[in-house]
Length: 315
Image 1 (cartoon, rainbow, N blue to C red):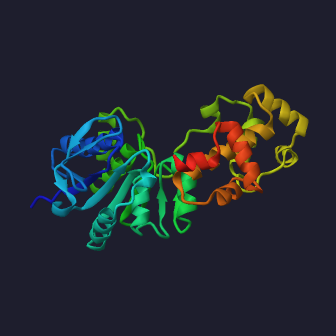
Image 2: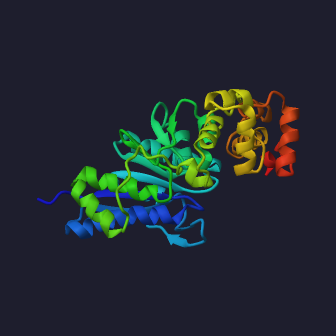
Image 3: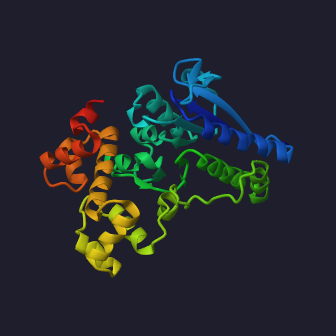
């Protein structure tokens, strides 16, 4: 007797990213095609409408609404930019109810916010798109949020979005049907080697910035790891094994600014992420970004962005 296919439901929220949704469904469809068997089925779902617009304006007609969605083996919340602002009681309750009955529940990109608000990520490993990482960690300190491309923790799975959706769903194919089929599907997609879940979302700093100087790369990475309690230039230079003057010359040559200015801009960008994605007070965000007073923080913020923190909070 043929095995029943695993049925994946994709819950689409307004502004969802189309590329990772298409990638996930294509992986499932190609697994069926390559194997010649129906291992997987899929459906699209919306909260209360018959269609949802993607981030790029593409209109997707959905097959089900929450109230009449069929039994599913897995549910994937698809959400894009501004996902931290979605907070639907109906969706939260539906996700909890489905999880309690044994359904696997996951998210793509910023859909992790809804899973966390439904209480499904407490104490679990999870991930979210890198732009939301800082805000997510501050908002849900009881989660074990990582910067990996995807995480699977029991019946909960989360994905950073973009091309990472392909890798996560290839891992599902491998788990159900074997590594060989997953590799064949990846080849069909011209995808190359399948990335493991522990792959970091962001490419190496040297690739992002074009910096090849090893001392400078390590110095910037050290700063990125000390946002809340900033290091002094002397601390950074000492850990790099160089003088402060040498480090300053490297920053001016390759980044066009002093280490102090570069570090402050990094902390202010972190603050902006928290302002847009959390409910922390401006004072709390100032402290979390390494500023000792809200007034000095507001002055530095306005100098860099041309508006005060309160203006971004209201927006």
